[in-house]
Amino acid sequence: MAIVWIYWLSSFRIQAFSSISADTIFFPSPLERQQQQQQQQQGKMDRTAVVPITFRIRSTIESDIPDISEVWAQCVDRNKNPLNQQQGPFNFRRKMEFLKSKDTIQKLLVSRLQTIRLGQQTIEECYLSYEEETLEESDRLRYLWSNERFRTCVERATQLSKDPHIWTEYNFACAPQSTKYLQHKMLTAEDRATGELLGFCEIAMLQNPMTEELVSPTGEKEEDHTMLSPTLMNVIVNPKFQRRGVASRMIRSAQTFVHKEWNSDRLSLYVNSDNIGAISLYRRHGFLTMTDTKHSSVSDKEQYYMSLQLGSGRRKRLLVSA
Image (cartoon, rainbow, N blue to C red; front, side, top):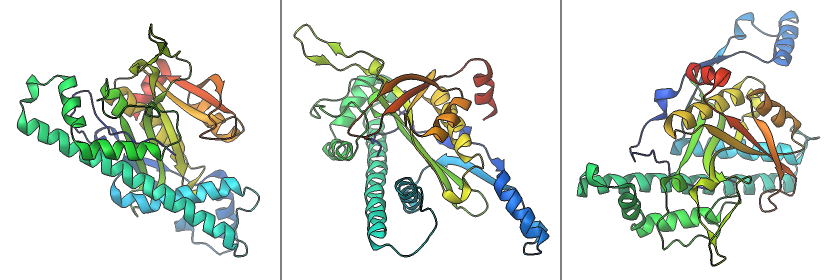
């Protein structure tokens, strides 16, 4: 599960992701093409049915949540039952686990978007009360944090998260030191023609395990926003549309967003060390394994921390084309 932040730009202006989003055409996977050819030869399928599909990456909205929760829960179920991915006989226990997982995910996503909307409203109120040009970043943060409802929403949402974030022992009576603490983005991939959900991912500011913790002269741990890094997380693809380039397109969109909107030259991620397919995908996109790590609150499995340098060479051209 992912931590909930609110998405800010350094200027505190809310901008649409559509400005850097682009349509993508993907074709059936090699296995699907083979199956379709066999069906065509058997006369069971109209040849005009094999057509490319156009999809887009955009900001996640409230109406996406039910579909995201459904697909996310399906992915969780498939990971738990890799040998039984077909529908098969009805299994009451498995069905109840699926519904429980879906409900948990849906509550988490709802809390995130509610916090984002409330934060946006609070900042707009700030601009109505004060001249934007006269406000420093610290002034805006204090104004935002003075909204008890927003502060409570952030605290409640962080309690639902098991990711390596900086809010675990945070004193919510104090405003964050930097806007980086609040950066978060949720992206949805959808079929432009039908509106069907194809995939989902998030970008959040999570702790970088390669950065040493700062310790004050008194021996207490100090908070330092440089310990945070833009992190790609919860990349899910609708099982019906896997192996069609959806995940790759979301990864490229995440790179573009982080580079353009957060002015960052690095994108990182955590991945289970036994997830060979995901590791291979990330490496094809230029992610390098930086360190082995383990977060018992997130997973009982060993994890790799992978990182990608943005804005140079081939990767830079890829960002422009996205």
